[in-house]
Image 1: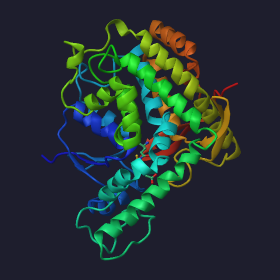
Image 2: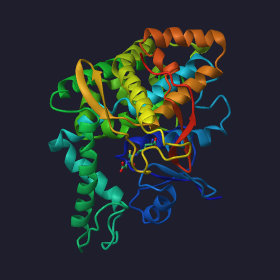
Image 3: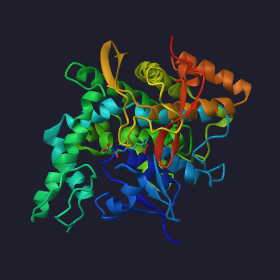
Image 4: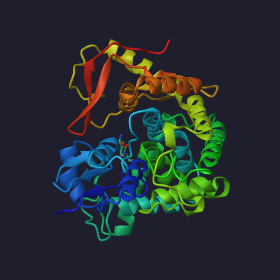
Length: 409
Ligand SMILES: N[C@@H](CCC(=O)N[C@@H](CS)C(=O)NCC(=O)O)C(=O)O
C-alpha cells in the first residue's frame, strides 16, 4: 500500500494545519515540497491552481484544502480519537477556534514575517528557495508556479534565490490587503500580545484547547502559530519570551505523542460535561473583539456582491478564476481603525461548518452556544448567511444553492 503524500512547505501557514493533524493522529505519510517536479507535473494541472497543502491519498486521489484533508482522515477515526467532539457546545466552539485560527490571525502572521527583514529574511528566503527548488533542481524550468517567470541560468544558488524572491514578493504584497499598514502596525502588535497572554493563560491548565487531545480548533490555530509566529526568527523570540505555554503547545502539536508531561497524568479526553473553561471564554471574547466585525463585514460585502452580480449561478467558481480568491476589498472597523481587507468567499465555508455543528446540537447545547458566543460578541457566527452558499467540488470553491440571506444589521 502506498503512503499518503502531503505536498507542503515548512514555511507555509496552511501546511502546518494538515501536517499537525497527520502527526497527532499518527498517520504515516511522506512530505514533499512543491519544488518536487511531481507537483507542477501531476498536482497543479489536476488541482487547477498553485496552492498548498495538497494531499495525495494512498489511492492516488488529490485533496486540496486543510478542512477537507482533515475531514477525509477524521471520517475513519473512532470517536475517542476524532478531532471533532460529539455534537454539542465543544463541537461548536472548536469550529469557531478553527475558523479564527485559519483566517483570523493573518495580520500578526504577515506582519511578523514580512516587517522584520533583518532577522527573518535570511531564514525565510532560504526556506522558500529550498521548498520551491530541490537540491540539484533543473535550471531550465525552475519556477514551479504556473504563472511564474521562467528563471534560467546555470547556478543553482542564484536560481533558487530568484524563485525565492518571486514567491516572497507575492506574499509580502498581501500584507496591505490583510490590513497591515504603518498606521495599524502598533495595534497589530498590541492585539497579538493580548492574544498570546490569553492563550497562555488557557494553556496554563490544559495541554490542548479542549483537554487531553487536540480538536479542530488546535489544528486551525497551529496554521498561523507554526510557520510564521513560532518558526520565523523574530516572532519565535517573542513567543519564547512572552508565551512559554504557547511555545510548548506548538512543540506538542508537532509531536506524535501526547507530550503533556508538565500537566501530570492527563487523560486523552476532552473536558468533562461539554464544559468550556473560563480561560477559553476569555479567549472567545478576544476573538469577538478581533474578528466578529470582520466576519460580519464579509457576509455583508459578499451578499451585496451577489446582488450586484446576479448572473452568477450555482456551480460557478467563486471569484471567476480558480486562483482568484478575493472578490475585492471590504472596508470595516478594526479596533478603531477603518481598514480595507480582502473579501474571501472561502470564509463562508467556515461559517457553514460552525452553523452545521450548531444545527446538529440538541436544544440545551444550542442555548448554551447562543449564550456563550453571544456574550463574546460572536453570536453572528451562528446565523449570518449570504444569499448563496459556498461549496467545494473538484478542489475548488464554487457558488452553491441560493438561500435566504441573514446579513448584519
Ligand atoms: N483554504 C486553503 C488555503 C491554502 C493556502 O492559502 N495556501 C497558501 C500557502 S500557505 C498558498 O498556496 N498560496 C499560494 C498563492 O496564493 O499563490 C486551505 O485551507 O488549504
